[in-house]
Length: 228
Image (cartoon, rainbow, N blue to C red; front, side, top):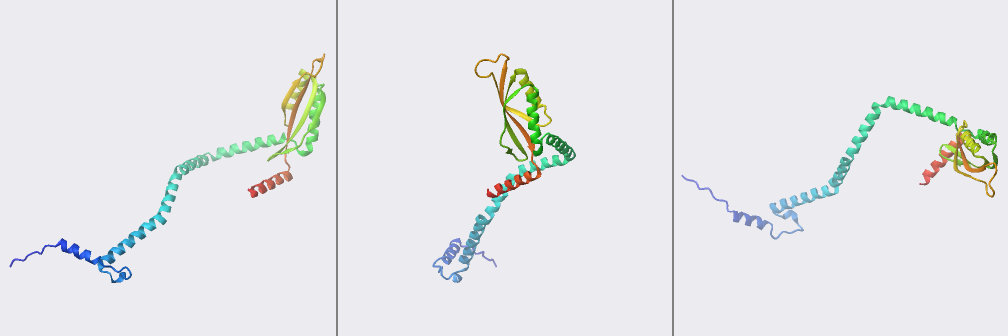
């Protein structure tokens, strides 16, 4: 006996599906037919997924992009630190040499108690060269981070070679003294028969800060940082 395969009537099926979405009572979704319930559940799931992406995953994605952007710099930092680690013994040796050099320079800076003797040495250098001091006036001490600077206004008169020798003597003092803003000129009025000149300059000497002054500097720096 032959059997017949019933054909699916698509028009009827679509009509049945469409009929389930008609006259839905949105106040009572529990009474909806199956297909509207499934469609509503799928729509809710889609909204939840999209909201989760925009509110959660988008921030994480931005953070991930930022970390990816940092990767080249982090790699470079890694290679630099690796090179430093490989050269650590040599770097320690260089550090020791720099500290020794700094110690030698500090020995050329007079302490607070030695400033008076240094001023006397500068004056003696000029007198020893036959110069006449018209002005020798120490200025206000300028406190820096790790040292203090004392400017001294100087004006001497004498022969050209004696002035040059005096500048050389100041440069060769055991303590650091530098000359700035040098002005060498002939005396005003009639020219001196002996060829005398006058020199104005600012001599600057430097001294290291004692432990009390260093502590005060650090305290002042800390207060300034706290105000910021």
